[in-house]
Amino acid sequence: CSCTAQILLVGGMANSPYVQKRVRQLAQERGVPLLIPRQPQALVVSGAVLFGQYPGLVAARRSRQTYGISCRSLWTSEDAASQATFGYPTKLWKEDDREYVADGVFELYVRRNQLVQQDEVVRRTFCPTSKSTKAVGIDLYATEREDARYTEEPGMRKVATVIMELPPNWMIAVPRRQDYDIEVGMRKPRTVGSTARLTCTTRCYGLFFGFDSRD
Image 1 (cartoon, rainbow, N blue to C red):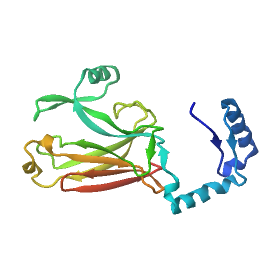
Image 2: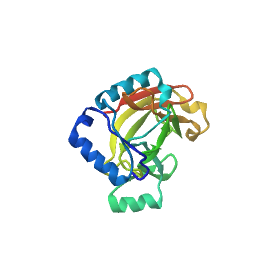
Image 3: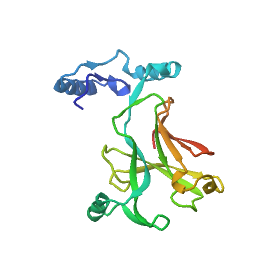
């Protein structure tokens, strides 16, 4: 990355003379300083302890992957071109609205390498797909790509699924189904063992979901 200001070498492998030599060559090629602590193998552990005691020490982190959820949107000429070339997204007819929609559209939440503030929440608002909807399935996807558009693209991984039941007779509360808001939020929690959390809420229902960084 051209924005690299310095390289910090820590962890057990940082004690290896070969690793140090190769990383030092890399640092020289990029013209950035290389920092190697006296006990690099212990720095990771001590850093985790400090972060647990003083979370405010880390104000923001960069996302390792691009995250988003699968949704449907009105069918466009771009969707048609993608389907003709790659075979996706799927074109569906919605009888309730008398219109075609694209299924499997990637709704972006966090882009790879994006700087995310501690406990920052990214929110998107959706609505039930039909008047007869009783539960909403929310699929969380991750990819290395920064410009992903569809969930069927190569390299896209489904890492979690949340099923949220809607309240009985939810349609009574609104004149149209499009007026019934389902808010889906995503955030990077303070805990080191997790990478993201989904928060799903309607006007009278809520759900929290977290997944491990190894997923």
